[in-house]
Image (cartoon, rainbow, N blue to C red; front, side, top):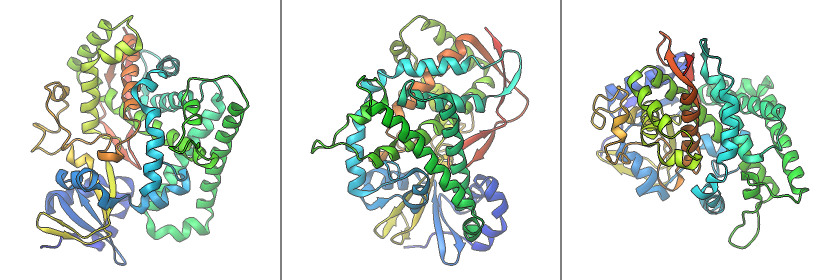
Length: 437
């Protein structure tokens, strides 16, 4: 067995400023030079294995998923900001929570939320001023956050509370990125009080959510929203979630439920604006479904769905998946020691020429030919820990596409599509111009 190709620590430190801003070019150079799997040495005996090998990803996420756990990035670092919920727990605790929460996200239950989602979408789309160039990410970011908020709490949450929760979640993400990309400054984050300030913000978010839950518990009227579903969910023994667990799960839903959706929406619209032929097919499908029920719109939007899938191929909102192997791993010609941190680059996997002809081209037809891409396409992860809210996110984006292109056509500016890789893959300077139809 061979050792993995190595990237020495001095190269990591030499490129630390660039990595802080955008690590993807650095990783891409290493993939091109060293192959689909390599070890990045971080110094002081620490290292991470990066891989764009789809077979290794399937092994870790599906075939031998019991031999892999999430890395401390999620089970320790992220916990400080979102608590111990489905996203961050492991083992039997995760199995118990997944079994409890899964029914909440069945399609039939999400269908009950469509009207709440649509009302939030329509309100935000009205903010778009025709015939003016604007950065669409803030609009879609607000939209996605409000869709989650209204789906969770109906009208029990005020706009001021939504705005504050949104601010807190974004501040927490920025702080976590600093911690992960500048581990050598950990002492400074603690000594300066910066970390403490961000953790106090998380406590404030939990206090806001706690107040809304308390109001709901004191009301006899039932609301058909996610909070009601969560309050009435029970474990196999008939017990309900503890108050603390409910708070953590809701906070995670806020963060995970809006972040990836707003990113996907923005990248999708930027790509559509750059491909007029795609936009016209979308408009045709939107016009064909005009007047139909929300559920029928979802069922009768194959082209819009393909456009979203292709957009997430090129710009996957979750662009890395982390795991740690609990057993020594023999993979192909390499030996990977036990307890190695592995980072799977979905961004690189989704752009491999061996699977995608003209991989860098935007071509929604890839997802209309009936071909199964599941062995190398992971926009929502894979295996038992696949994103529990994947249907919620897809339905939301499809409804946005219908409402947006029923009223507007999009034009792109001369700037290229820019990215800002943080915890998720975020867009940057997403300037578009909309004209009324």
